[in-house]
Length: 149
Image (cartoon, rainbow, N blue to C red; front, side, top):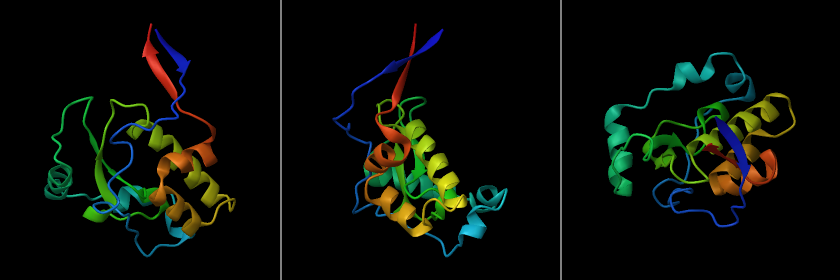
C-alpha cells in the first residue's frame, strides 16, 4: 500500500535545481495557441540521445534506474521550452524536489497559461529562475512524499 505523507522541505536538496550556468533555460518561438494545441509536445519532443549524454556529462552524472535521473527540460515543452542543451539537465528521482514533483508544476502552469490565468512569458521566467519557488507559488506549499507502508 502506498500512503501519502506530508513532508516539510524548507531545505531544497542538491540536484533539485539545475546549475544556471549550464542550464539557464531556453525557449522556442511559440505562441499560447501553439502550446495549447492537442499533441503539441509529441511533435516537438525530440531530444537526441547524444544531447542527453552531453547533459549527463556536463553535470558529472550517470543514468541510474530510479535514482538518477531524467534528462528534463527546465522550461518544459508544454510552456515552449526547447530541446537544446541549455534547457536540459539530469533531474534526480531520489530527492524530495524531484522530476515527478516538477511534472505536477508543469501541468498546473500549462493549464493556467491555456486558461488565460497566467502569461506564457511569466510562466517561462518563473520556472527557469527557480522551479521550486514557482511550485510553492502556483501549485501551493510543499510536495507530498509517497512512501510504501
